[in-house]
Length: 194
Image (cartoon, rainbow, N blue to C red; front, side, top):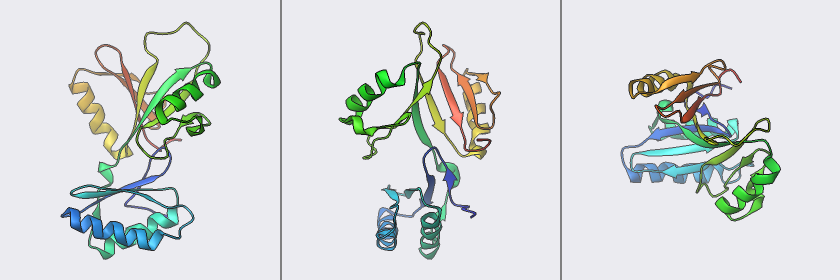
């Protein structure tokens, strides 16, 4: 199934539909709500003054939402889609995962697999990356920024122009690691090559 309006991010397909006003966006959100209220997997929507962001784990629902957007005369801007995921390197996930889930979301129930997923969307996803046991390094956290693949080259150029460097690109296009001048890292992640 081709979903031209959508880009696969870490947990779901995401789209941004451009609106001319908050009221136009609200009408679109209402139409999506009415059409998808009985869907097995309900989409998540975020209304802004000139956009509606939509996240869907169901491709058929995503396709239906694109059709509703077309009926409302809305266009998608796939290059505006982004998702921030915070990653923590650890050699002992069970030791720290429940703590971070409890502190960040108020319950250990949000700790699932290698992730903390806040069902209310108040915090970014936290992903625990397994490492070999080692002395605690100076840097434990790094950012994973999920972007559409076509946006990554421009972000790399911008980062390099701002004094950064490419720290690792052996896994491209799945991800490329940039480092700031002090060595702090961000992974620019895509669904390509995974």
